Image 1 (cartoon, rainbow, N blue to C red):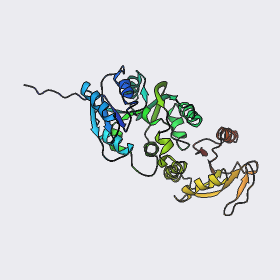
Image 2: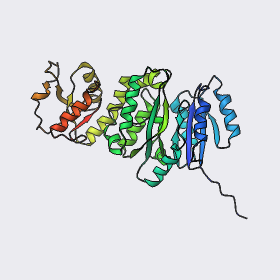
Image 3: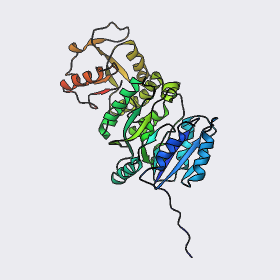
Image 4: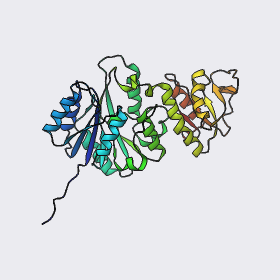
Length: 338
């Protein structure tokens, strides 16, 4: 008599939650309503004190595909890692308790990974839902993220900001064993993980269709948690950017942007062994320890590498266009990192 063969789901959806009673059921129903049904949904309660746990218990009781776990150590990193470790699917899809996956998200992302064996992670375009109508900066960020819809664009722009909306991704579960998952610390853990994976050669792609609604709120971690402060982002960038610069033989470089903020952010790179030869700016400045050259007076024929730390609205594209006009190639002669 042959033994019954246990079948594993193709996709594991990992959804950590904390005090999400207002939105959890909507998020879960968006997964249950997927056109792709070969999934398991792993809910991870992270010490909720509202009715979230009761809602999750009801949902898991009524649907055998839903597994309810508990993570006592507070933090979305710990809860997500708990869900990832319990996942049995070939692919893992992320989901947050206040967001919404459109019906064909899992189908299209799983099919993409099936047909693109060289791709490790696939995201999609997202729709920004802002009930407060107050988050113009987040809206511009989402527009920028949506514009990065090729592996090259994602890789090339990864040091500007996080090039993915974290809960919109699906990835191969084997990558967790190969490159590690989220690491807890005083930095944006999701950004750190994507920088680490990209630095290790993982190809990240994006389906150029809106398959995910990203709901904004005043309580979103990117607004409230000090790990998502501007300084924390630049410290995280410096850790991985310095490795990239040194591995690509760029230990000496020029920085475009000589303002106080730029120099403070560059200091994180200098702590990692990168040497700054000087600064390029719109005007000549007197700096205590470095030279500063007006961009019109810079020797653009010199074989040097340039980092642009200018983050003012509109300035990034102007600097990119100017450098292209000087024959500079992005990724080879310069990078934009703000």
